[in-house]
Length: 235
Image (cartoon, rainbow, N blue to C red):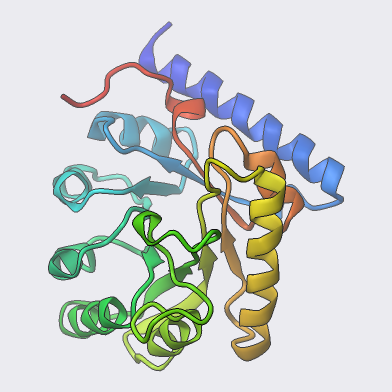
Protein backbone atom coordinates (compact mmCIF):
# COMPACT_ATOMS: atom_id res chain seq x y z
CA UNK A 1 0.00 0.00 0.00
CA UNK A 2 1.10 3.55 -0.60
CA UNK A 3 1.25 5.91 2.36
CA UNK A 4 -1.85 7.69 1.04
CA UNK A 5 -3.71 4.37 0.93
CA UNK A 6 -2.63 3.52 4.49
CA UNK A 7 -3.82 6.84 5.83
CA UNK A 8 -7.07 6.61 3.86
CA UNK A 9 -7.77 3.16 5.35
CA UNK A 10 -7.03 4.35 8.88
CA UNK A 11 -9.20 7.41 8.41
CA UNK A 12 -12.09 5.34 7.08
CA UNK A 13 -11.86 2.95 10.04
CA UNK A 14 -11.90 5.81 12.56
CA UNK A 15 -14.80 7.54 10.85
CA UNK A 16 -16.71 4.26 10.96
CA UNK A 17 -16.03 3.99 14.71
CA UNK A 18 -17.29 7.54 15.20
CA UNK A 19 -20.46 6.77 13.24
CA UNK A 20 -21.12 3.61 15.28
CA UNK A 21 -20.48 5.42 18.55
CA UNK A 22 -22.83 8.22 17.56
CA UNK A 23 -25.53 5.73 16.55
CA UNK A 24 -25.21 4.02 19.94
CA UNK A 25 -25.39 7.36 21.76
CA UNK A 26 -28.21 8.78 19.66
CA UNK A 27 -26.01 11.56 18.32
CA UNK A 28 -25.37 13.00 14.86
CA UNK A 29 -21.83 12.25 13.57
CA UNK A 30 -21.74 15.81 12.24
CA UNK A 31 -21.51 16.95 15.88
CA UNK A 32 -18.04 15.40 16.14
CA UNK A 33 -14.86 17.10 14.97
CA UNK A 34 -12.06 14.64 14.25
CA UNK A 35 -8.65 16.09 15.07
CA UNK A 36 -5.91 13.92 13.62
CA UNK A 37 -2.88 14.23 15.90
CA UNK A 38 0.22 14.30 13.74
CA UNK A 39 2.90 14.57 16.42
CA UNK A 40 6.04 12.66 15.35
CA UNK A 41 4.69 12.33 11.79
CA UNK A 42 6.04 14.37 8.86
CA UNK A 43 4.49 17.36 7.13
CA UNK A 44 3.90 15.14 4.09
CA UNK A 45 1.35 13.16 6.12
CA UNK A 46 -0.51 16.38 6.92
CA UNK A 47 -0.65 17.18 3.21
CA UNK A 48 -2.02 13.70 2.51
CA UNK A 49 -4.63 14.09 5.26
CA UNK A 50 -5.74 17.40 3.80
CA UNK A 51 -6.12 15.75 0.43
CA UNK A 52 -8.42 13.21 2.07
CA UNK A 53 -10.63 15.94 3.49
CA UNK A 54 -9.17 16.29 6.98
CA UNK A 55 -9.49 19.87 8.18
CA UNK A 56 -8.30 19.66 11.79
CA UNK A 57 -4.78 18.60 12.80
CA UNK A 58 -3.28 18.38 16.30
CA UNK A 59 0.24 18.82 17.64
CA UNK A 60 1.61 18.71 21.19
CA UNK A 61 5.18 20.10 21.02
CA UNK A 62 5.89 23.59 19.72
CA UNK A 63 9.43 22.73 18.62
CA UNK A 64 7.95 20.20 16.20
CA UNK A 65 4.69 21.95 15.40
CA UNK A 66 6.04 25.37 14.42
CA UNK A 67 8.29 24.20 11.56
CA UNK A 68 5.73 21.64 10.45
CA UNK A 69 2.98 24.26 10.24
CA UNK A 70 5.32 26.46 8.22
CA UNK A 71 6.04 23.58 5.83
CA UNK A 72 2.39 22.66 5.20
CA UNK A 73 0.63 24.63 2.48
CA UNK A 74 -2.75 22.89 2.83
CA UNK A 75 -5.49 24.94 4.54
CA UNK A 76 -5.78 22.97 7.79
CA UNK A 77 -6.70 24.17 11.28
CA UNK A 78 -3.91 23.60 13.79
CA UNK A 79 -4.87 22.53 17.32
CA UNK A 80 -2.22 22.67 20.03
CA UNK A 81 -3.17 19.80 22.36
CA UNK A 82 -0.07 19.25 24.52
CA UNK A 83 1.05 20.84 27.75
CA UNK A 84 1.96 24.42 26.97
CA UNK A 85 4.85 26.27 28.58
CA UNK A 86 4.53 30.02 28.99
CA UNK A 87 7.76 30.64 27.06
CA UNK A 88 6.21 28.92 24.01
CA UNK A 89 3.08 31.09 23.85
CA UNK A 90 4.54 33.65 21.46
CA UNK A 91 5.37 30.93 18.95
CA UNK A 92 2.16 28.93 19.35
CA UNK A 93 -0.16 31.87 18.68
CA UNK A 94 1.44 32.40 15.26
CA UNK A 95 0.13 29.12 13.82
CA UNK A 96 -2.43 27.56 16.18
CA UNK A 97 -6.14 28.10 15.57
CA UNK A 98 -7.03 26.56 18.93
CA UNK A 99 -5.18 25.69 22.14
CA UNK A 100 -6.71 22.86 24.16
CA UNK A 101 -4.42 22.86 27.16
CA UNK A 102 -4.69 26.07 29.18
CA UNK A 103 -4.67 25.10 32.85
CA UNK A 104 -3.34 28.13 34.72
CA UNK A 105 -4.20 31.78 35.20
CA UNK A 106 -0.66 32.93 34.47
CA UNK A 107 -0.56 30.77 31.35
CA UNK A 108 -3.86 32.26 30.18
CA UNK A 109 -2.55 35.78 30.76
CA UNK A 110 0.70 35.08 28.91
CA UNK A 111 -1.16 33.47 26.01
CA UNK A 112 -3.58 36.41 25.85
CA UNK A 113 -0.71 38.88 25.71
CA UNK A 114 0.98 36.97 22.91
CA UNK A 115 -2.26 36.64 20.98
CA UNK A 116 -2.97 40.33 21.36
CA UNK A 117 0.41 41.20 19.87
CA UNK A 118 0.71 38.59 17.14
CA UNK A 119 -2.82 37.72 15.95
CA UNK A 120 -5.61 39.57 14.18
CA UNK A 121 -8.38 37.25 15.39
CA UNK A 122 -9.20 35.83 18.81
CA UNK A 123 -7.61 32.46 19.61
CA UNK A 124 -9.95 29.62 20.59
CA UNK A 125 -8.96 28.24 24.01
CA UNK A 126 -10.14 25.19 25.91
CA UNK A 127 -9.47 24.86 29.62
CA UNK A 128 -7.69 21.61 30.41
CA UNK A 129 -9.42 19.94 33.32
CA UNK A 130 -7.70 17.59 35.76
CA UNK A 131 -9.94 14.55 36.25
CA UNK A 132 -8.08 13.14 39.25
CA UNK A 133 -6.38 16.23 40.68
CA UNK A 134 -2.86 14.95 39.97
CA UNK A 135 -0.76 18.06 39.21
CA UNK A 136 1.82 16.02 37.29
CA UNK A 137 -0.72 15.35 34.55
CA UNK A 138 -1.68 18.98 34.12
CA UNK A 139 -5.13 20.43 34.24
CA UNK A 140 -7.07 22.97 36.25
CA UNK A 141 -8.75 21.78 39.44
CA UNK A 142 -12.00 22.90 40.99
CA UNK A 143 -11.05 24.54 44.27
CA UNK A 144 -7.34 24.43 43.41
CA UNK A 145 -4.72 27.03 44.24
CA UNK A 146 -5.03 30.57 42.90
CA UNK A 147 -3.24 29.78 39.65
CA UNK A 148 -4.79 26.40 38.86
CA UNK A 149 -8.34 26.94 40.13
CA UNK A 150 -10.76 25.94 37.38
CA UNK A 151 -13.11 28.89 37.79
CA UNK A 152 -10.26 31.39 37.89
CA UNK A 153 -8.67 29.92 34.77
CA UNK A 154 -11.95 30.01 32.87
CA UNK A 155 -12.51 33.62 33.92
CA UNK A 156 -8.98 34.62 32.87
CA UNK A 157 -9.61 33.19 29.40
CA UNK A 158 -13.13 34.59 29.05
CA UNK A 159 -12.07 38.09 30.09
CA UNK A 160 -9.17 38.32 27.62
CA UNK A 161 -10.20 40.10 24.39
CA UNK A 162 -7.61 38.17 22.37
CA UNK A 163 -8.93 34.78 23.54
CA UNK A 164 -12.27 33.00 23.13
CA UNK A 165 -13.32 30.49 25.77
CA UNK A 166 -14.43 27.53 23.65
CA UNK A 167 -14.89 24.76 26.24
CA UNK A 168 -12.98 22.08 28.13
CA UNK A 169 -10.46 19.34 27.44
CA UNK A 170 -9.23 16.36 29.43
CA UNK A 171 -7.26 13.15 29.16
CA UNK A 172 -8.62 10.09 30.97
CA UNK A 173 -6.20 9.04 33.75
CA UNK A 174 -4.75 5.56 33.34
CA UNK A 175 -6.29 4.33 36.58
CA UNK A 176 -9.79 5.52 35.73
CA UNK A 177 -12.24 3.87 33.38
CA UNK A 178 -12.94 6.06 30.35
CA UNK A 179 -16.65 6.09 31.26
CA UNK A 180 -15.98 7.45 34.73
CA UNK A 181 -13.42 9.99 33.50
CA UNK A 182 -15.55 11.39 30.70
CA UNK A 183 -18.69 11.43 32.85
CA UNK A 184 -16.77 13.62 35.29
CA UNK A 185 -15.64 15.91 32.45
CA UNK A 186 -19.21 16.14 31.16
CA UNK A 187 -20.39 17.41 34.55
CA UNK A 188 -17.66 20.03 34.54
CA UNK A 189 -18.64 21.07 31.01
CA UNK A 190 -22.25 21.57 32.09
CA UNK A 191 -21.15 23.79 34.96
CA UNK A 192 -18.91 25.84 32.67
CA UNK A 193 -21.68 26.35 30.11
CA UNK A 194 -23.95 27.66 32.85
CA UNK A 195 -21.51 30.51 33.37
CA UNK A 196 -20.28 30.79 29.76
CA UNK A 197 -23.00 29.57 27.35
CA UNK A 198 -20.74 29.76 24.29
CA UNK A 199 -18.18 27.37 25.81
CA UNK A 200 -19.71 24.31 24.17
CA UNK A 201 -16.66 22.31 23.08
CA UNK A 202 -15.64 19.12 24.89
CA UNK A 203 -12.29 17.80 23.66
CA UNK A 204 -12.00 14.21 24.88
CA UNK A 205 -11.22 10.76 23.57
CA UNK A 206 -8.23 9.31 21.77
CA UNK A 207 -7.58 6.18 19.73
CA UNK A 208 -8.39 3.80 22.58
CA UNK A 209 -11.41 5.48 24.15
CA UNK A 210 -13.18 7.65 21.60
CA UNK A 211 -16.44 5.68 21.97
CA UNK A 212 -16.75 6.45 25.70
CA UNK A 213 -15.95 10.09 25.04
CA UNK A 214 -18.72 10.37 22.45
CA UNK A 215 -21.23 8.75 24.81
CA UNK A 216 -20.45 11.48 27.34
CA UNK A 217 -20.77 14.39 24.95
CA UNK A 218 -17.37 14.89 23.33
CA UNK A 219 -17.49 17.33 20.43
CA UNK A 220 -13.82 16.90 19.48
CA UNK A 221 -11.84 13.64 19.49
CA UNK A 222 -8.03 13.62 19.19
CA UNK A 223 -6.87 10.59 17.21
CA UNK A 224 -3.31 9.73 16.21
CA UNK A 225 -2.17 6.15 15.74
CA UNK A 226 -5.59 4.78 14.77
CA UNK A 227 -5.42 6.97 11.65
CA UNK A 228 -1.68 7.22 10.98
CA UNK A 229 -0.41 3.86 12.21
CA UNK A 230 3.26 3.56 13.18
CA UNK A 231 5.11 4.26 9.93
CA UNK A 232 7.13 7.28 8.85
CA UNK A 233 7.51 8.85 12.26
CA UNK A 234 9.99 11.68 12.60
CA UNK A 235 13.35 10.82 14.11
